Amino acid sequence: MPKVVMLGQRVNGGDRSVGGRSLRGRSLGLLLGAIGMLAVAGCGGAPPSASSPMGGGPANKTLKLLYWQAPTVLNPHLATGNKDFDAARIAYEPLASYDSRGKLVLFLAAEEPTLENGGIAKDGRSVTWKLKPGLKWSDGQPFTAEDVVFTYQFLSDPKTAATTTTDYATVKAVRAIDPLTVKVEFKGPTANWSQPFTGYNGMILPKHIFAEFVGTKAKEAPANLQPIGTGPYQVVSFKPGDAIVYEPNPNYRDRAALAFDRVEIKGGGDSTSAARAVLQTGDADYAYNPQVEAPILKQLAAAGKGQLQAVTGSQAERIHFNFTDPNKATGDGERSSVKFPHPFFTDKTVREAFALAVDRNTIAQQLYGPTGSATANLIIAPEAVASKNTQFEFNLQKAAELLDRAGWKDTNNNKIRDKNGVEMQVLFVTSVNPLRQKTQEIIKQAWESIGIGVELKSVDAGAFFSGDPANPDTVNRFQSDLQLYTTGNTSPDPSAHLQWWTCSEIASKANDWNRNNYTRYCNPEFDKAWVAADKERDPAKRQAAMIDLNDRLIRDVALIPLVARSKVGAVSNRLTGVDLTPWDGDTWNIATWKRP
Image 1: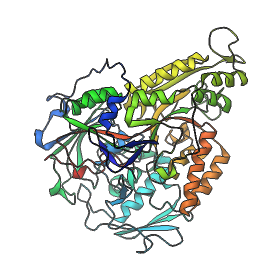
Image 2: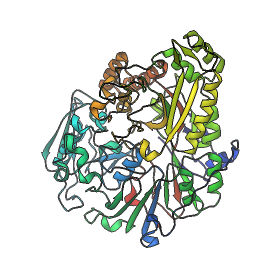
Image 3: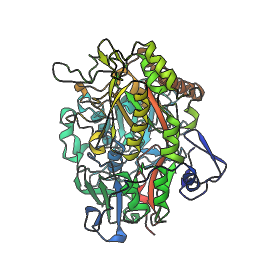
Image 4: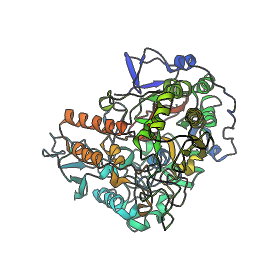
């Protein structure tokens, strides 16, 4: 299971695997000092001032969080990015979640279902959850099993266009046995009984608030911006893309134990400024995902105001191919439609060439340092399902030869390959972030050296990950040739994440681009293998099947994994209780955060 390490502290107990690399008795701080230095200019940006939205409330009773990817929606079942899940997770709760050690932690559930207590059916076709008695929503209404049933009805309605449906793909029905007992029935025997209603995608919605906003009305719900939850804090103000203010939930079951009178999330800015505000100036308590070059992080941490908390993560920085043509549109204006295959990425040989021309080791070592390592895998955690069968290579000569073999040559002497009148010119997009911009530059230089024309574009993270169906620049719409970002499985069982690559999950105008297969990859053989793997209940066989699914995608070059990243947060020295896990939002245990 993953272990948590802090910048400047030693790793105890032998080896720790970080994205496939062993760290034996060495600290992150020492490793940061050992990597090659890059130019550290351009670290500008100012931390929030006392007069900013982050400055309100008594200093010792206000918790200040910085999210350079600004939250835009607080309904977790309509969210498309971790920043939205994290913000929603302060107000909402799942039945349970997994900590970094793989232990199930109960939230709304009263006990862990097992075969022994009858919670898990012997035939694997259902799981029964007992709920904690006396729980209330923040508006005082009682929480019951009907809310769990309704949450499933909300997200499973195709017209709702929920982003969490893959976590419930095996669910047949959800039934309230009594007010404190809910039964989840599956379409067939399954080993992954804990996928629904746990972790990132398991947050429960109040039926009495959302009942009138199912289906096509889902995005109109006022509670998408002003949630009514069972969690420790409730939202008192929210400006999407900017700031959120929370106060204690008066009906929280352990209200007296909450340490803060006010929680503030300030969104926007950049990751370097956010990291500086925690590690160097001490103006904030926590900074989400300080995706900053390792030498700069070392420099900021030297001030001694905070530390980096890192946990072996499940998320891999990766490049996605667009398997559809972003430059053609259907009659109703839909670009990147399955009606128009991509002019060259549908050729596996071309995809192999692009992958061979990516220097993953340089990206990992120079930019990420000890918080990431080069990887060939989509699934990188838990360790038991991280494939050892895959490999990667950086070979520009071989890449050029593959493009020659595929018929892509520079016939008009403009230094860009072409074929049948089509230029091999690509638009490569990612979110605004210094690491990602430098990653793009490294890749662009290599691709251009073998005759590929590359245009780079960066989109503000708040827009890129917003999920807004009206915004053509979101990851969902994918109106470019290539995208770079990070995601991964949100459960120790990766089946739901692997389902993202099935044909039925393709994002399109018809589903508001809210399905997870943004790349529009479609391979019927992979679909069949996924269905068989998801039904497997024998632990050893299921593990092998998950590894096989990963290997199928890598062999087919369905994507280019780059860096196996640790999950990292910048934590003020004055803050205690932060305990990151790969399987839930950074704020999952915010009820226990304290400032001594």
